[in-house]
Amino acid sequence: MANNPMTLIADSGSTKTAWCLTEDPQHVIYTQGINPFQQNEEEIGSILQHELLPHLHTYLSKNRDIDAIHFYGAGCTPEKSPIVAQALRQVISMTARISVESDMLGAARGLCGRYPGIVAILGTGSNSCYYDGRTLHPGIPALGYILGDEGSGAYIGKRLVGDILKQQLPEDICKVFFDETHETQANIIQHVYRTPLPNRYLASLSPFCARHREHPAIHAFLLDCFEQFFRRNIIPLTSQLTIQDVHPSVLSTVHFIGSIAHYYRPELTEAATRCGFCVGTIIQSPLDGMVAFHGQ
Image (cartoon, rainbow, N blue to C red; front, side):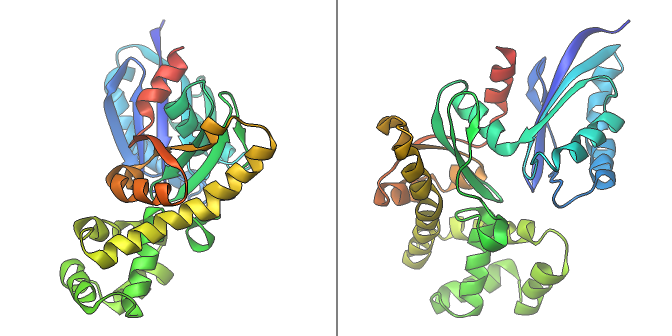
């Protein structure tokens, strides 16, 4: 008989997924991102089979069971979550209790635990919500990298290449971009319009801005990207919550999760101040908070 059952927790974005077992939370396993809006059950199952399962073999071979799986992921709406749950059930465990929730709820639990707060994700994509300490309250729709995702890596990359190709940024920045990235207009068009997962490609271009953040034009560009996030997402959200009598101290602070928030902390903080907000906690990954939440 198996003993000492384990819990598997996942934090998944469109670019990568971080996994850990509650008994060994410092050992984080990374696979490519899982998003049921972009991948079907077979594709997700292949990722689990080839990128995750080999790392779990050591634990599973020692007569251990995974008794619960908590998966938090981008695109995991109530309509799409069953796709991920079925893939987990087929590949990892037919008997484990499986919970598939949105990355937004994972971020809220990882950042705030059981306390209320405004929570935002700034990674490959972006999203935001109000969390009352138990559940999420509907906010402003993220709408994805084409219609929304302001402040995200994909948004920054999309605006960056658009501005460069349309010569909206200074000539020296345009030249450095092409020299450093070895991109061409034809290659950019190919990746954006004719290859899978263009949001990942666009997000991969955003580090260029981090390398040149001291350039006045890039600094102004980044501030505008993050101000758009606050103006189009957080300000309308807090306007709704004011009517619901949420405490003002909660409404004035935004907590962030994700690589873009982590690496662009100075510009994000400046943009927040310009828009009348404070930046609270910023963490790159919510896994530690998720482990703590599910251990309570």
